[in-house]
Amino acid sequence: MILARVTANVVADTKIEDYKNLKIMMVQPIKPDGSDDGKMMLAVDNAQAGIGDTVIICDEGGSARMLMDTPNIMTIRTVIAGIVDEVTLDIND
Amino acid sequence: MKLGRVIGRVVADRKHEAFEGTKLMLIQPLDSERKPSGDVLVGMDAVRAGEGDLIMYESSKEAGQCFSNWYHPGDVAIMGIIDHIEGEDAAKTGGA
Image (cartoon, rainbow over all chains, first blue to last red; front, top):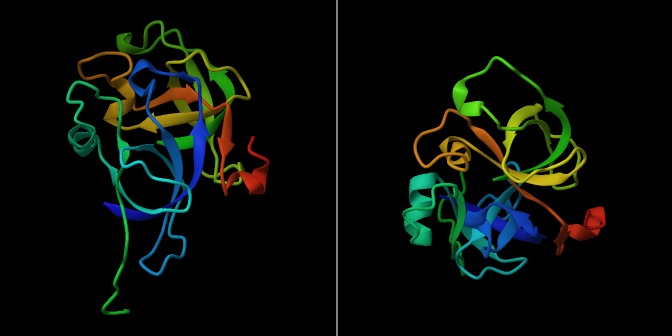
């Protein structure tokens, strides 16, 4: 799983059936100190995230099915799994 | 899932039977400022996307699952056509 910041909400009426009533958000992976770290992604929101939130992203199909509790939907891969309240970095390498 | 723009089409008569009847589009991956970022991909169109459309595409095994509920060889598929993007990020690009 990775840390990311939610940067935008994606509105798309034309989607495949599996995504019909799912919220899609734009997320930017970040380092523990909050700085950007890697390429922006789109993720299905499964944690009622809002823009600006720090979140946990799961980017694997099997995990996504378990998170979404939709074992028969096989087209979801990137999911917002949780909203982060606090990140504590003990050792700053 | 990633952000991209449809920039063209690919026509191939001789191809694996799993791709029979599937429209193949050229996708340019984009970064958050809608600038090209990464190599152009060939993706299967599951939503009747057109050239110039801002789209969201999925890669890996999940992509092929739009076209069959068993394993499918395709590994990039267009899952949706984006109408607009709202939020902090939209300020940089006017939301398009």
